Length: 553
Image 1 (cartoon, rainbow, N blue to C red):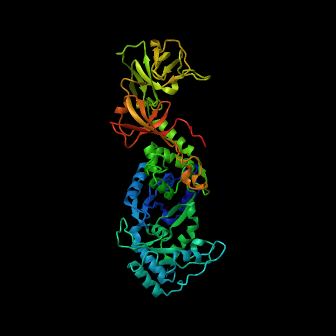
Image 2 (image 1 turned 45 degrees about the horizontal axis):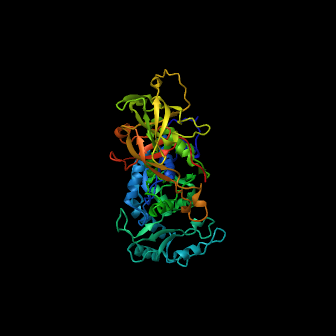
Image 3 (image 1 turned 30 degrees about the vertical axis):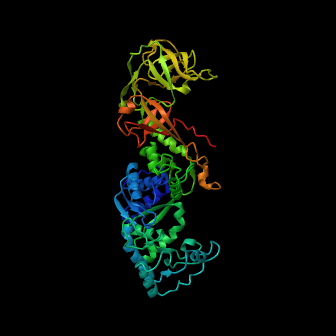
């Protein structure tokens, strides 16, 4: 394989290139993405997906998708399906699909091999007793009273565990490593526990299940994974990963660690995300305020923007916190290139153009996307009744306000210059509309009026516009690191993270566009149809504003 040496390599690419140069693993590159199906994937997983699939693609290798389904209590087929959908939506396809449960029989045999070698024993201690035996980082552990059981007794007890003779927690199988190791994980870790629970794939065949540390490295080895890439919290697990491979005498997969993705103004713990779902703080795993891939997708983020974000964040060995603004920047960059431009008014104010008749009707051409000439043109309709944003009018304008006010003029985007002649109020003195005149010679692209105005505003034709609901999303938390603050992380939730506007008006094209479009509502931001949107009730989610308007509180 020819590799471009002029590019800057991250440390994992340097490792792989050196392995290819020396012929390690026979010149193969096989990575894997091993999620536990106990929740939906989030943006941190997206970084790992891009890394594992990206490295395999760059170096002509393969990537396995392996579900770490060793805890039947928390896992579900729903999560398996969602994980597959998310990976494919991001633009990747795995070469092989496996489950740790595929290897339950083989892992069981590995455990028996350790027992026969005197390297594993059945322990009757309680979890509290085992924790106490382990000591502390500065105090060596104490050996379990069951540590020196005979091989024969351990084989019998382990078989009885498998046969369902004991209750959950009554016994465990522990590896016999080193109770004095400075690495607490090496102090006789538990490798099998009893769980009488129905498994989503193996049913009730097993009531003993391997722990992560026992299943992970051996599954890598069974598949002959060459580069097992984990996040930094697993760096202390690596000695145990290597110990199991050495003692069981299997293929020497190797683990490498990189810094996980930490994003401010959110939480990335599946446990905390599950709390938000179960306690009703959000509307589900795919709530557009969630950092889940499905939530970002529903909000209108594109696969390309998330892949770009993963690239910009880079691969490092040191933990850091990434500003949410970078993710928003990436989606703005992509949507600017692909989003259809449409006019929409969120807070409508009726404008009657007095020097046009009620029957006046004109088609005005407008670009679908000025960044993409191939997107072509559409026709907007113009009549004597339009809507503008209430914020674009001020009865008593302040200094620096250049939009519409009594006696002032503005240009309507893609249309004409109008002048405010009068205001309309109800019986209580509330503003209900405007009366304006238009300048016939000021048509956009054909202006011969010679008039100069300081503002251009957006609008929609009141006679054929469509009504829709808009959901304006903001960051879910008010503080940068909610999980590091005092007290319950949920007390820092931004109560204004969702605002619903139910009387928005949009140009007619919104009702006839093909499904699945991304939009830029002119001057308002980027939007997409919500999954619940229908022809009978259009609902749009704001993906991101045109610029960062979030204020730290």
